[in-house]
Image (tube, rainbow, N blue to C red; front, top):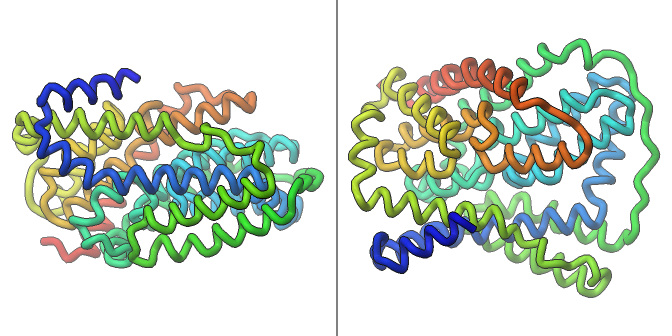
Length: 380
């Protein structure tokens, strides 16, 4: 509410001129539309039991071996982040894997931390994976998902492989042994389950087809809303719309844009460097990570975007603001949403431990991902 009120004052008083407000709306409106659409799809798919059924399958495919279950959870978190966005992983995959671990009688801590790490670090490959990517996609690749992926594929691979290796080594003792396969989850309405599964399966390629992502996300949301109106109308609530994330994002967009209009970009340019050498790219990615952990990754991206200027430098900035938010609780909205979920499930992950693990992860991840970008983009 504070962000919304401040943003409204900034627009109403002309601190952000009307022309800049309109330009900002044209840019971020489709991004926020995608967030609303994909959230409705994933929430209704979860209500239909799709994620519970997937959890059952993972438990059985794991063959009672904890390390095998671990691998399946890593794949699920990565896949969800890349194709459904990091916030989806934080909100919906987190309770699935935590409850799966609890019901199987094994420690949920490795699974919980792996989920939030991959929600952030696996969010580099496609525009839909992260709001920051959606903001950068037009300048980096003309909005083409495949062109975007062709620039960031190498650091994106680092963002998946390196966290998996680090966490597997850190938690190797907890990943030994066997577990009890929990009972199958009951499906209340098989028709809704099938419709939800079909919508998600069709949606995945549609989101990388090059069509503006808010369109397939909105169509998928509409199809599921109609299905639930017919089959289970009592499930539909206003809570399906992600009011809080949208309000936070919109408020941050307005406030940062106003700061940019009044000279913030000049100050940022002085510390962000220039060029596409490895040290220059690492300077920008490091500044992105530092800013994300200081003020949140969305405003960090917006503040530093004017200092990027080329696809390679924009990709370096995305490395910082996507792979870097592993240290402070507020570095990304996904981390805050994740913490709400694990706390509600009765699982405690001390922030002190989270920060220490994050420092280790970022110290290894950022240089390797930036090096991978530099080696694959042909920068001098």
